[in-house]
Length: 288
Image (cartoon, rainbow, N blue to C red; front, side, top):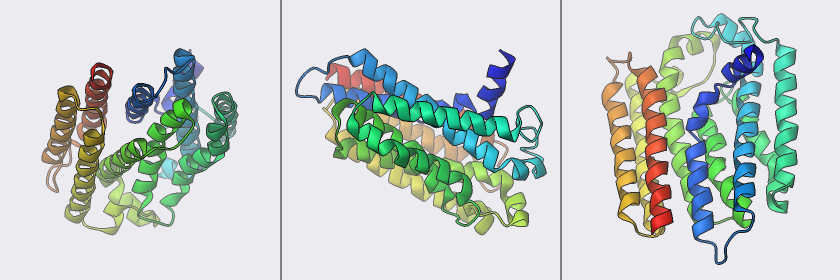
């Protein structure tokens, strides 16, 4: 149990709450929009969940391995598992490799398209770890790595691409990119000193928050487009309204002169936003 808790801490398993609800939304849409009943529904759902878990482990495990020397120099992150000596860099890399293999094997059991796209998905989720070394757009790469979840869930059911899950992917990408900018405010001075790239490191705090707001405006616009394309149900619209309200609250709580609420805004509010939206959308789709 001690080893499990260490690796769960390594990958921040609780942060699965950001992408998993969107994957389940897309999975439900794929089911209800299918021209015929989908066979082995529960097996496919299990495969999707496993892929989410394995991909998440690869992304965070690789990020912690790639950044462990940087994390050791940053007082905020020095207590993470690798710099603190709880997990060795070699063990972390083995953890990443095992989960990457498990991810690919699981995709092979779903359908040919998920199998062919699995290396692409892994490349995206791992690329983020090096982006902050050369571009301030690393926040959007992180958003993209989460945004592929709803597309992958839809492909797992239908074996093809479609517009609606791609719009949802854009929602996730801009939403995640925006709140990651807020999160990065904590390391603004450290990133500047070490030559690392982020929106807060490049711009002032006020400008960074304006960029974050701008991305969230795109999130809401894409969300409205997404909801409009779904079967019309009042619950879906309520979910979108609540999601929007939580995003607005996030920007009320975090301002240039008030950054002590970053932890609440990043973890609590965004987790609540994704769960709320998914609950209303999924119930709305099933009852439409």
